[in-house]
Length: 264
Image 1 (cartoon, helix red, strand yellow):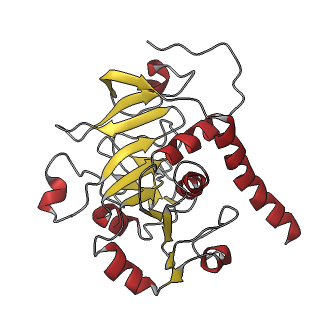
Image 2 (cartoon, rainbow, N blue to C red; image 1 turned 45 degrees about the horizontal axis):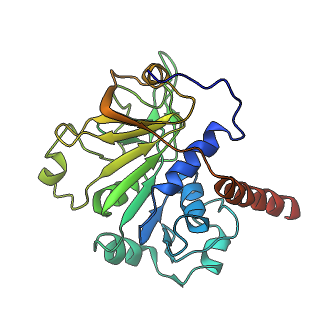
């Protein structure tokens, strides 16, 4: 059992998650970036562990180098700082489906034990209408065609569910072999990074397993925040806390966005 530290860290759990998500992009060449937490992590990676990382957004921007966190895929900062802007059909048909992108980075409203994603609708209980979410966007194609997929989201019983309310994006389906059966060329999700730790699919079963804990987090906390009986790796590791340089870069990105909003 890993017990929580009694010291108060100088970083938040969100910052711990975002830094570790950025570290996961070390060594990648190209990344198809989702807006939100994935975009924060990808831009932080460019500022720290991988300055040569080519960021690609669904709107057709290739090699974007935003000075602040973009508000959406249509944020003008993405096009203004890009190496190239291509039509969306070309982005999907040539770049994505052509297998030219190493990593897809996605978020989720719900994820199940096989890293399948829901971003479409969630049940709100008896006699209540469904809660509508942003929808699929390019996530199904990203998860299918990128060399591998990383996911980042906050860890709670609400997000990590035993059964999705709607399957928007296939991760590993119902287990090993499903992706191959459906003709999906990419490896699918290889890591889910949360504010509590890191989960990775078991090579034999494709079920997500807790492989790393963040500082100050216990196995019991992660299991309590997961909607299924979460397995724990025999070689459970621990992530390193953010360095001062990583925290400074992350906070600078976020503060740049706040400053832009005030000036607008």
